Length: 299
Ligand code: FAD
Image (cartoon, rainbow, N blue to C red):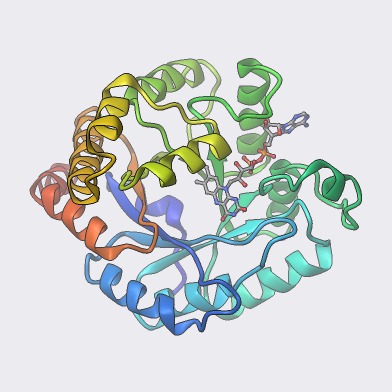
């Protein structure tokens, strides 16, 4: 059965888990154990990332197919466009259709280094909005897009970034997933800004449990998320004690999620980093809250 993720949001909160494919030199089996463990948590859907320009374009569709057709969990395939031809994109869409998957997270992808970017062969898609327009023109796909409560790193201004978001929604994005943030106030401010912009699609909140210092420093430098003082204290205090840092990171993410759920978010999208034990702990902590909120939906 085909299912569009946008309809899942009728019963909020939608809980989803994100995984990434193995590196090309590793066999796909390495991720299958992860999928197996995560599927036991019965998320509403699972998403699979896609290598962007210059890097690998891994077996995203193959893994999404296993999630959907072996485990019966709805799958969302990420697709990046910055270094892809229309021919390649259409090939992926065709494979997804064959696997009965109708959900695509349409992304631009991170820009490679300047000189590689300038010399890139494919220039058919400059922005995610170009990809969204193309997918929409083919009909019948449910399209997700990314949004940035802390503003995208390359955006000229907050206003320009929000106008881009509006463009993506107007062109056909059916739901949004946020970039990670470690301070929920960014999200609340963002929601206030977009409340006057006629953007009414569901927005799921991307949460990344931070479990080591290097990980978060690398990621925040890539994606522009800031590290609030409250979290900086955790990093500084436990940096030489990985177990303590991991536990504190899990507790911090759980607290962020409980606050967001209490404020009525449409969904929580957990960046699992292919570590099921962390997702298991976090979803375990919120399982009663999740059940309570779903029951309210039915009432
Ligand atoms: P866009 O919406 O195209 O925006 C990119 C920048 O261009 C923004 O600064 C925007 O304001 C600006 N812009 C847009 N249109 C215009 C215009 N017409 N004129 C001027 N400026 C414009 N990356 C991967 O490689 N693989 C993944 O699987 C992946 N998954 C992700 C999942 C989520 C939930 C998120 C939040 C990000 C993900 N990323 C992934 C990262 C993403 O590719 C990067 O953040 C990328 O830099 C921007 O992608 P986008 O789709 O938001 O781009």
